Image (tube, rainbow, N blue to C red):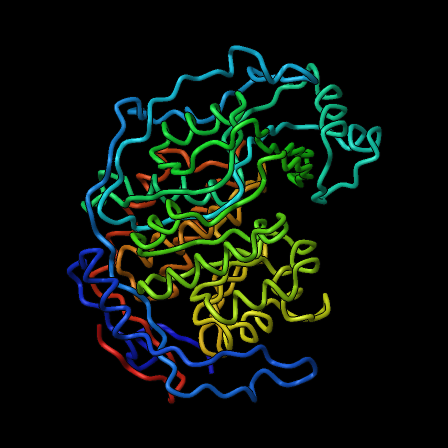
Length: 471
């Protein structure tokens, strides 16, 4: 049996229409969620034989609240977090150029609570269009993600001299958070502005200043202090005419995440915590991730984890499962990542993976490119058809999709089909443009159209044993 629309299925969970305040929503979640010990289905053991008792699937009400503005935040619809047409063209030794030295004011004091806090890698993206010959000349395998050292990064950037490309405050998680912030700041939706923050690691170098300044202008609050004498990580994103992207990541010397009292305080004030999967690859970060998830759970926050990359999952398999099984309320993955989690073959369907994973995680989102996506809950899954678009650049599609899922949940929607369709539309908009960021005008249009459908939405299932719990 599959999850269905309200017209074909009994109602399992209706959310009240008035948005809750952040504090009341967190306390409601704490009362409603009764966690049971979760375990990973053993290899070779049917996931459908795993039985959970006293399990309550919770989709939260809107987490409302006023936003914090910046006097230098963008007021127009331009993508001001990106510098285009090769305006930033650092070669070896040029990262100390004075053009990168942006004088930042100390961050303003934060709100009483954050709607969403993301923990992730803070990377500056250099994205450009290249042909297949370019990749062959450099010996780069098309469509892969590779970690490179300082010398390799310099070699690729020198080869790109003369190419048109963009520099942006990037990273998978920040792409999602910027899109979520723009959806949540829409003046057409008549909702309180969502308060979105990020914590990560940037160096005290000019690229670190560039990163912080650009996120600040996108109204995404970057809360971590720069690492003294550290170097900020970069990702070179090479997109070929068929819209396939190849990524080369340089993590920098500041690619660690420590869990200090400042970060603990921020986590305790957050309603949703998102952990980026790429963090699992960084040295000595797993304990910080565990502590952040533990504190978030104690404070009644929802916890989301992004799978990030197949190779990352394989290298950090046990650590991933430990966090996902014990803490995650939401898991974001693409089809290959979901199969890697389940140790399924490439012939197994993404829907099978979504169903499998949903025995361990309350809500699982699995994207499958042009074939659509799936949302899994309690061993069942619904199919979300793709939104039509002419692909220009697939980089950032999954990040955009995740922002749509989160926005739907945060705005109080309890209908998975509607949330998934919104996420699909957000992803299609990003795929149809050059660059990974959802534009302000597109976010406003998407948020306005979505709010028209919220009044009568319900969270439904045909699974007879589902349990109803009103917040």
